[in-house]
Image 1 (cartoon, rainbow, N blue to C red):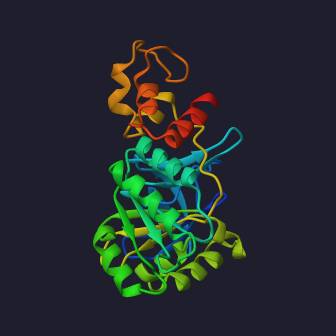
Image 2 (cartoon, helix red, strand yellow):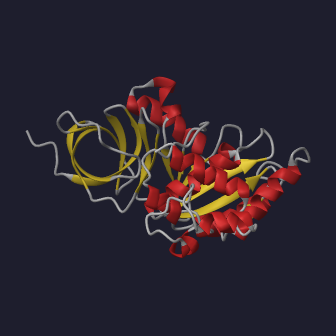
Length: 295
């Protein structure tokens, strides 16, 4: 019996081998990948075939324009595919990590994805100086930034974010407690209702709250929410990707004596000379050294 023709859809949530799809008519489908593969990622565009009421089998995945993921020596975690920008959210409280922000920006750079850094909770005085300094450092490197308070000045926050997210698929990342959920609820007023829909659709109870989720924006585009996490592993990046993702490093690489200079202990290194005279900040160099020495 034919249940219906294949249809195109977007993966909007995953858990194990089960995924939630949204088709062109905005109908939801609980789907599994044909065969034994579990290679679907939120944001994937797929071709699926109906297998029962509200059930489908994913036949194929369209080629991805990009894939953002993090990796350490033990595990790789895909975050989302086919996205237009990564929005890194941080706040002065709870305490934030500069290295987390820098790592997220490096991963996005390697994947060829635009970035935006949002400093949230600007109403808090505690830790404000450190947060503003971190933002100023990023601005000096050419990063796009925003400062706002999603909870105390929601209208202003929405006015700032809406033009930058409209018509684009944006991935929210950040450490726990930085206010990503508040930003999501500003941009997608029914986000919580949609989240509750995901659990029964995936037959996984509350466990789906630990995974990335795709939310369509009212005026076009989408927000992909991710759970907060402590570390942004970059084990998947090559030496060349690390250097290319550091704006103050890349233009100086050609000035080293040796073409294969790793900028660690080699003589006549243009990078270390720039650190010595203050053109490259010492904390940024130490960040670079830690990444490279781990390889």
